[in-house]
Length: 88
Length: 191
Image (cartoon, rainbow over all chains, first blue to last red):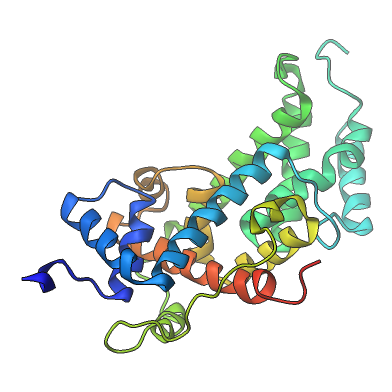
């Protein structure tokens, strides 16, 4: 009977990801909860996935600015200026 | 100047880096990102009469770029069959043993992981990890987590099934989690 509620780590992680996109049926929610109560690795997985989402959200709101190499190269910068000026 | 916009000659210096960063995180390719930023500036120039000074210039450029990125994704994925990259199967299978137990267990993330977003180096690592994903994985992940689309909208834009979308997001998140852990959260590289 208890096996009916038991998920494997490979299944639970799939459901954790899916729960970030849609509401899961109650049976699956309970299954996840039971599993997480016993499994610290899947608990970490869930916590870390949620943290990644939060970091992205915070960065978008704080408008963090890039550092090289994620900035325009001098060549690209020059090319864009030329194109803009030629159309202006 | 009736439109209230600044001198186009100054656009590249003022907004170039920001827009380039916005693009490269999402498309993962330097020359594609440069092209998109270039197109954004040219489109802005063409329609500068329509700029309403209600919004900031930066917001205006960003919204043009967002459209360019969506167009890029749509045209890129339009002709692809509704299938999953075979490439990423192998890496996922390594995560768990045959009976569904962790093979490579998640580790504790140290040193106040919540504040990572304030560090520029973290975003360099984050962008690197995104660029290591297959294109399809990255695209779906970006649309979901960076652009904030729901899975229905992503399915429509990319013409993929919802089930496929969930599988892709699961793989993308698992990959990114592991990559960030190795390259940042459990690594000595962190500053």
